[in-house]
Length: 211
Image (cartoon, rainbow, N blue to C red; front, side, top):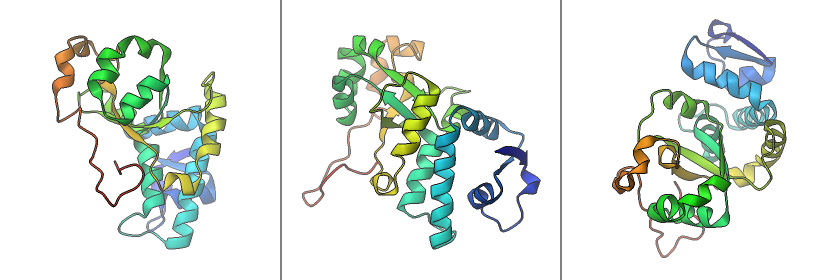
């Protein structure tokens, strides 16, 4: 995989299709593409898998004005994803959007958790940290003992039928203990515009609510 100037992307050619066909990544001189490059270097198998699935969807359906469910999920994770390995009580509180329990009552358990940021737009946002910055988190099912092992596992996890269900949970990352000095005062978590309640399910809905 090579990084090339944005000018090498022909007019009318889809970005993801160009990468798939040429193994070249059009790159602009900005922070967004800088972090994208770093993620390619750290997680090459996962980035290739994301690109493969994007290109396959484009080949099947073309470039639509509105992305389908699969391309939407791929883009969400590529831009804003993270992987969390954490004890079960933390995951239960996170899935319930029980922020007080997650960040205050269970605070000591965070020393047993590990969050790996993946999305390059997420990394770009954190250059200038703001309280509302939220990752779309995927639950790790394997030990994250190295970037290479996480990369190999994650690439295998990215299956279309799984992704269309959007298996991500929102996590305001500056709420994580140790990530931001302001959260040492627990009133930090009282902001309902950031730490939102879980969406309500209607009586006819099964499974997880959409994010």
